[in-house]
Image (cartoon, rainbow, N blue to C red; front, side):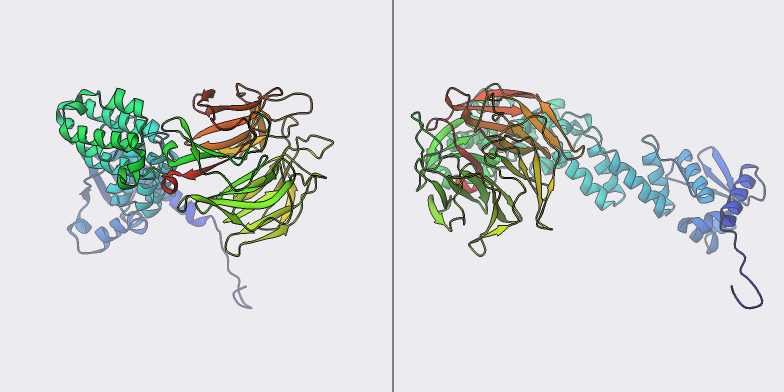
Length: 569
């Protein structure tokens, strides 16, 4: 109540009713006092409505501008259909944004200073980003100083470069725009071959006009990180490259880097720095495991996806099979395991800058067949076997304090489970307790220090390999109590469901799995008859597993991790 003698009467929908009536009057041409003209087309309006809705019209009609005294005003720089949409919005507060009208509508709303409509167009363009249009949207957004959209479209183009490079928009890029794109460390490519092929396609689109740009573009293709066979067969043999001295010099530089590994430390350049998402970004380490006689090893070897070859590396200080592995702070940690006589609590890490393995503070508990992962700059080890019983305990290592501490235990004793981190939570998958093999999943939240029950797998399995690929958890192989498995399950956190996907070519229990360059590598294992040195690689785009070069020094039972190439070479 306003006072003791009166009340406030309010009809909330009255303003919208009035504007609706004004819109009807406009459609009937009644009481209109301004006509807007675009080309040969005209639309009648009420200038008071336009001035109330648009800063542009407010300045035009309420100031001393000539247009304030005219009955007809010509609007330049907009399409008539977009002007109509904007005027409809001024009267109704609504408009329909589509793929067909968004650019014209954004031009009109920008000119007429209808900020809310312009922002709605920006948000719409965010939602419809696609490899076929992202470069055009980025350029369009730059014209209207929409910094957030420019950045989002640029990130989208780099993240989806493989598809973007096949689009017509890509082939229409200016040389400077192409150079800015391919020079980024953030460019998401599996291999530098993709970048070279994109540059070649762009050049060949208008070869006479563009061939002179090729040397500068090739300076930003990381040729030293390309497979030697491809470098020789497809790049060095290309006529455009062969006929240009600068291009040939870049190929020679790459050959020196590939053929003279002992000189790589003095051959460093921006072209030898791997992109953050490519296969060239990392080196796979296989540590410990078993020899052909089934004895534990301290041996370490590395796999380079560029050359496709395994090479010996510095061995650990201790024999370790069924070892846990984690990578933290550019260092590779070997955690616990079995040395052939006893289960281990000892820990050592490999520092590539020093080039040797260094003992680290041991865990509080002896563990083999444990799971390990990294979250929040700490190493978490879960479950395992201490020589007497499967474990439910979890402990955490902080490199800042160089100490291990116990955290809340799982609800279930679990050995030989798969452990990984996804979206800030720790997943423990499958495993066994010495009596039963599980398909169950437990999830640990470090924010609450509590465990919860996750969605169970379709199959029971222990001795699995686990890794994250494209935001999903992949669980490979294992043993279900009666059979050694080649099956693979994938957990999608968006659906909360597991599904079976393409199986591996070999049955693999005690398999180790890592992700590198957008692919899974399943390394070693046991097929029920033989310890395996073989390696398979899964390409999610082809949905196919293929064998790659087998290990040289191991016969299964290895732990695996990936160190950045920049820290190792």
